[in-house]
Image 1 (cartoon, rainbow, N blue to C red):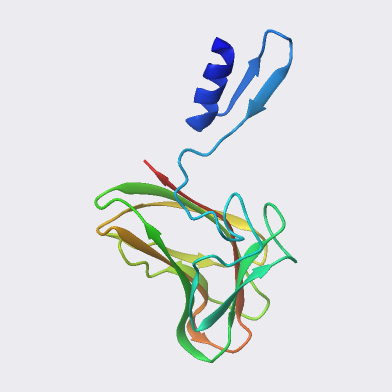
Image 2 (image 1 turned 90 degrees about the vertical axis):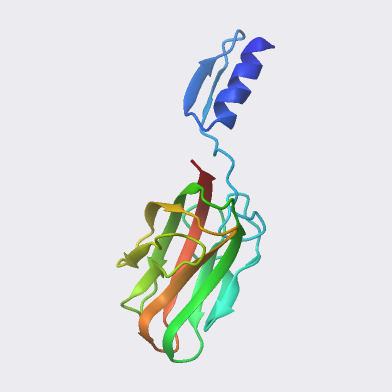
Length: 177
């Protein structure tokens, strides 16, 4: 019983570990430490076929079953009207004055040249990450909050968007340091 408790603690704390249990069975794995990202959407760890609380600001957010980095779905943002600043945004409840490690898997679609993770509200310094490839890539960064709501913004094309610009986002994690 004591070994099982240690296994639970190691996995709960996000430590990658391998254990040999008295029966000779080997257990291994990595668990995420208190991921506060909402679990009701296709970009979450425990994904569902839903966009969850993503908000459309000039992009049509949808759950996409044709491409993902992990699981069956990703979030697809597609521009439905030309112009600048077209994005999808998700509000996440956080602690004020707290540092978070963020991980986002993303790729741009065929038509766009300036997909970005940029212009977040509720943080001291917003990330400014250009998504330059059509291959799934993990982007990791740290933010410190200055509010209790952090609005994460994801752009299909940060500049002058045209109808059809797309970007995909998946496996987003928000973990308190």
